[in-house]
Amino acid sequence: MTADDSFGRLDDDDYPAYTMGRAAEMLGTTQGFLRAIGEARLITPLRSAGGHRRYCRYQLRIAARARELVDRGTPIEAACRIVILEDQLEEAQPINAEYRRAIHSAGPSLTGEDLHPPKRLRG
Image (cartoon, rainbow, N blue to C red):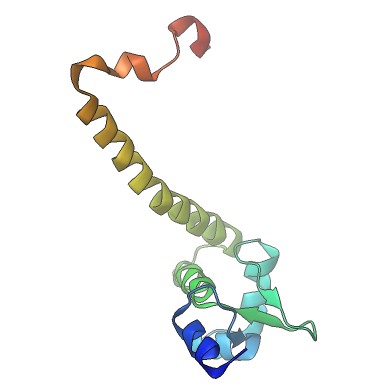
C-alpha cells in the first residue's frame, strides 16, 4: 500500500481507523458503553490482526446517537433499537421517494391498486 492509498482512506466513512480507546474518548463515553452497544448488536467493530476492536466514522455517528438517547434516560437496549429503526428509515426514504416518482411518471396507466395484491391474497 502506498502513502497515497493510505491518505485516500481518510475520507472513507467505513474505514476502521479508530481504536476503542480513541473512539470512547471522541464520544466522551466509556469503553464499556462501546462494548454494550456491540453486545446489543448496534455496531460490530472490525478487529485488528491482534484482535482489538476498530471503529469507523459511520459507527461513531451511530454510537453518538445511542449515547444521546441513553443520556436522556433511555435504556441501552431500547436506545439501540431506536437507532437501528432510525437508520432503516433513513435508508428507506430515498427508495420510497424513487418509488413515488416512478408511479407518478407512469401516469394513469399505473394506479395504487396495481401496487397491491388482490384483496383475497392480502390476508
